[in-house]
Length: 366
Ligand SMILES: [Zn+2]
Image (cartoon, rainbow, N blue to C red):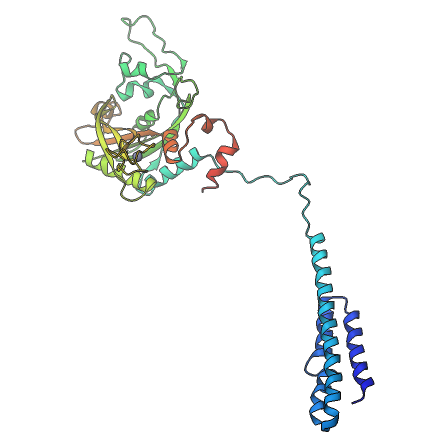
């Protein structure tokens, strides 16, 4: 084993590493010059067969050569990796000053998604979704719902009149009073239309826009949304209403939610009730517990949701339904209000101003 030969093997290895212009090429050179069958590895193996006096000398020479080769390999490896990193940085650089040219993903308005979610709950129970006109005859909006022309409830609805009733002659005249036209003040006229249009039994849910002459402020908007529900069948009772309400709040707010009914008055239901649900934040635990006050329900334990009751027999009669045979229940509530407490929205104006910064956090709920 001549010294020149060892030097030649070393120099060949160094030359091969220097010539490698990529990490792949270097890997090939590495296998060829430091692998198990490389000349230096074979030379190293031959040392064992040398006579004792030559072993030390040859071992030293081969060892130094291999050391130099490994060192050169590591240095070239580091060099090529640095080159690659620099290249990747340039190739994959993002110019953050370039103009933003993508159309941002939008989000559906939470009033729409909440309304659809409520519809889904009832469609799953066999209800159908009913719609009606927003420009509505006064008769559907009031009279058919047992709110006669002189009924005080009629005055409480701050109504937009599109066309006032024409009183041909006087009130004492021929009685030929034509119905005026209003922007519907509630979704209840759809109850009437559902009863008139459909065969009994009727199970319908009516979501939609309604109008009142309110100024836009944090808690009022002249255009808002309601969901109305009506069921008319043989043998329906208040217990069916209660069970339906409980199912709805459990579907929307989770297991264990309850509702309660408080006596109230609405012309189109009899008996009528105000419906509350257990506060979904404190679950009633803030009541009488000053250490755990609840902002959502003002520590009252209940949140008012809307109105409900058994359909007034006079309403059934107005729709040609025999109240001796059929009974029904109805309830309605505001979607804005539900959105306000379900998502802690403080200001109703946020819902109507169309600012995407409001809608976007609700995400792409489908
Ligand atoms: Zn609470």
